[in-house]
Image (cartoon, rainbow, N blue to C red):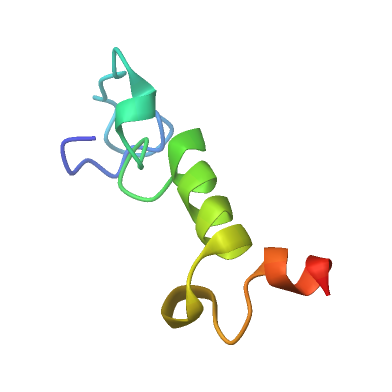
Length: 64
């Protein structure tokens, strides 16, 4: 995102660049997460250890 707060060209800054491979990045611009970010967060919520998703992760809650 090159540190631009552009919201994909919808803000005052109109310059932005699309990534060739967005799955390599976790943010589209300075504030909007990508699908990869959501995938990482959901995996941590589902099966993350106690220091990340404590006291229980979602997988543990659904198995009990």
